[in-house]
Amino acid sequence: MSQLTTTSYLILGMLSSRDWPAYELAEQVDKGLTEVWPRARRQLYNAPKQLAEQGLVSATKEATGRRKRTVYSITPAGRKALREWLATDPKRVSLEFEGMIHLLLADQGTIEDLRSTLESVREEALLSRAVFEGHMEYIRDTDGGTFPEKRHLFVLSSAFMIGHFAHLADWATWALGEIESWTDTQAPRPEA
Amino acid sequence: MSQLTTTSYLILGMLSSRDWPAYELAEQVDKGLTEVWPRARRQLYNAPKQLAEQGLVSATKEATGRRKRTVYSITPAGRKALREWLATDPKRVSLEFEGMIHLLLADQGTIEDLRSTLESVREEALLSRAVFEGHMEYIRDTDGGTFPEKRHLFVLSSAFMIGHFAHLADWATWALGEIESWTDTQAPRPEA
DNA sequence: TACCTATACTGCACATTGCAGCAAGTGACC
DNA sequence: GGTCACTTGCTGCAATGTGCAGTATAGGTA
Image (cartoon, each protein chain N blue to C red):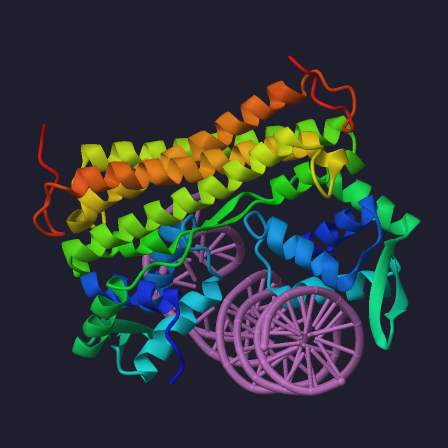
């Protein structure tokens, strides 16, 4: 009877809206939630299995021709566990930012390395921002896609993601401006 | 001859400034870099060991009375590996935001749960922002602390961290305003 | 009929986490 | 001078998570 992880509750949450086959469950979470909860594909198959062992979801085998698939369905115990989890305090936001490690060690490399790191950060950020802006537009113009009942929540989350990547891009742009006058990575910032 | 991880390069980077005993190395990284590169304390002891096996750092045993400690030192091969890594593109920024999972599943819980999640996010963000603002002030007023040669880089990284947590706090505050008129978690947003 | 892509997973080696454990030095107070 | 808490300085290990390779069917196109 191991402790449930956030990933388990996430799966439980997906199943609280409707039944899902394992593959589609993995697809949805992988495509839609990696930006806020990055987990290996493998884990997205393991989590519902463990939930089934604990009786929080039930598994049914279906067949399309000779191909089988497992469809999961939440149980009343599962709904209860989910409600209880939603009332707990969330874990702190955590960031993994390899570019910042590059930057902090930049005095061991060249100024070109540093510039290229910041440019890479900016480009990635602009791409991601565009993705979420597209997502936001889609939500505004439609009923919310796969989860119409969550439309109002998607508006909140998309706003965060757009702001997050906008900040990242803006910061990278600002930092590129700051280092523009540097001739090497040891250079102290020029005083105004 | 396993592939080096970002954590290895981080340790290598620390050792490029000066020699470090294993414990202090772990302390420094744990205290100063968890916000951009969160790793278990255990790994901060394993990483230099592996680097030593690969000849990128050398390990020396010292003694204070009957107590022993390992002091690590970077080798020329280590410096070369670090320089090469600094020229590569960094991995994409990645976020782990459990509060957002709570929010996206909020339609399965109460409006109080949602409000309390957002308040928790805001409080944590304000605390973290204050920490980095203190850090920024410290850098401005001193020569940069333990790493005076990195003062100019700390200015850049602190600016990012302050902006990051400011955005998080601002977003949470905005979202709390948005949900203020909601009577339950199913409520559609009122049209303007 | 052949081929490509999507569906639908499982197995396994390896990496990482997190906690418990152990031992010695350091300082403060009584 | 004793003891108590805290810091230094790590290691072992079970449990968990990652990532890649592998297997097989279905559906569409040319």
